[in-house]
Image (cartoon, rainbow, N blue to C red; front, side, top):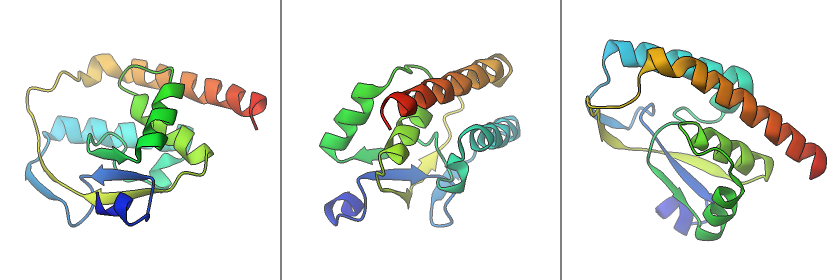
Length: 139
């Protein structure tokens, strides 16, 4: 909250990857490998990985007006909504800062990497296509 209160950013984004973060129970090796491939794919298709270390971290805080605007524009309602919101924020010149978190892996996750991979690629490609069209209509 201090990042927003101080005006340092409009979006504060938690990251499990920062050195100051405290991880009490890490993800399984299988999940870590999948997460690594996911980060590479997201970075290749969007360039976000150069700015943020953990796009899928659930700890996010938005300035109210910014959050309402960004989420009001979203068309994605699946696993990739985080990426769409970040891309929209970046396009609008919004300032995003990361902060360290305390986190424990929930081993009961519903994500199935083997079933999700092509869905993630398809969703990322759709986001890029639609945001590219939006950019042409609304430079």
